[in-house]
Length: 372
Image (cartoon, rainbow, N blue to C red):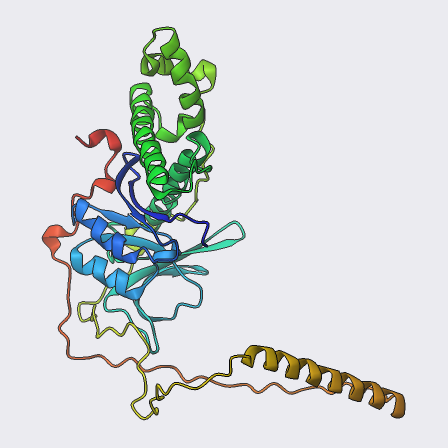
């Protein structure tokens, strides 16, 4: 860890393929949650969908995004317990339902949607706070979360195409100069990449960014406009080609097959973000113990002596006792039946979405060409 100069916490716009915010953290072990919260101030609430990996999976984080007015999608972390409150749709392994995050000691505040379907041999599960399946269908959830891979490709461009995999110096000032220079160049290249895609009227991922970076200097050496030539000769040079990205095939569920959410459903509850410590548990004292200066050496000697004594005893027993016949014994497993947890409905008034904002003007649901 001492060799790592730090880490970057980044906010990346997957529609425009542009960096929105970058913050450098000197400690590589530090959690980026605090910086991520501050970065959200650079984007508007109500029109932003947050996509993050499982490193940001937290009930508190999800509730904070909802309180601030952001929409979000996340994959389901393994062994996450939920309380099912309503099922919009279910057919075999495929379901779309409203759940409360956490069924035991740790609980989230708001009801979210949990969707699941099988693609090939893999089960895919997602959480989202967009609780209206007609606004954000299951297929759109899978398609949008797949775009989270864009930020991984953006970092790959920094490392592979712009040489950030090799740090030039061990001095923090020189390291930061290299990092910011690569980020500025990457920002310009990503803008050219999107411009070529728009002029060629193709999807952004049908334009090869590595080949584009290789071709632009060649066109510039001959006095040609690199963007114009990439659009004109892109298909012949292989810069524009069919996309190789993975397409997630999710089931399309028609609205008439969805069961509406009952009016009396409570959409929030009292949250609990950490285990509650028992008040009866005795508090350990902070008394300082005197430690012998050669304690570690004495402990090592004692452990070595103990191991020698046990080895001699085992060898003596093996020589004296006759070989015993081993008889397998079938162990009976104790089956523990867990009683179903009772869901107690509190007197909290039901929070229902306003019909006037049932379909907000989210930019991430609009085609890229429709934006300003």
